[in-house]
Image (cartoon, rainbow, N blue to C red):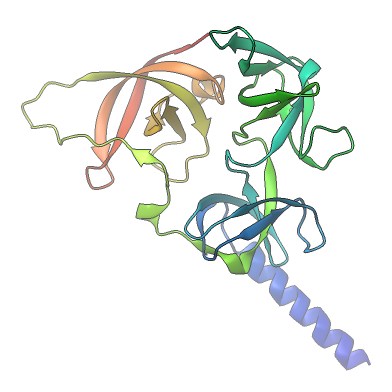
Length: 253
C-alpha cells in the first residue's frame, strides 16, 4: 500500500512539474470541430459555447489537463444594465452600441441572470461593445475580460507566424531614401501581445491589426479603450505587419 501511494505521489508531482513548465500566454489553434468551452476545468462544468477547427484562441493558463482561454467575441457574455453607462446610440436613438463600466468591479456572466455562471470581471472606466440589450442586461463582446476552459487535447500551439488570426496591415517596404512617415490610426488598444517586439496591439474599426510600441505607463491608461494613435511606422515579421512607435495618443469619445 505504501509503495502504491509513493508511485501515485511521484506521478502527480511529475505531471505538476510538466504543466508548470508550460509558458503562458500563447496562441492556440483548435484541432477539431464543435469543441466545447466550459466555465470550469471539468467535463461537468456548464458549456459557454463551441469553437471549430482552426479557430484561434489566446491561452492564458492551465490546470490539470485543461487550458484557460480568453473568450472570443462570439461568446455569450452579459453585463447588468445599471452597472454601465451608455456612450453612444444608433441613429434611431433606441439601441446602445457601447457602454462604460460605472462601478469599481462588476461581474460578467454567462446568462442575463444574477445566479448565472461568472465568466470574468470588468473595472470602472472599461468600455465594451454591446451586441444587444435584453431584460435589464447588456449582451457584450468580451475583450480580454472573460475566460473559459477547454481540454488541452483539442488545442495545439499555433506556429508563430500564424499566431495572430486577425488581418494584419500590409505595407510596402520603405526605400532607404524615403523620409520617415507618421501614421494615424483609430481603434481599440489591447495589451498582452505575445511577441517581445511590442507589448500592445490596436485593432482598427476595419479589423486591421497594428502592433504598438511606446511608454508602457502611458499606454496602460488606455487599454480596452477607443483611441487615436499617431506614430512612426516600421516593418517587421517578414515585411507583413505594421509596427507603430507612438508619438501621440488620445482617447476617442
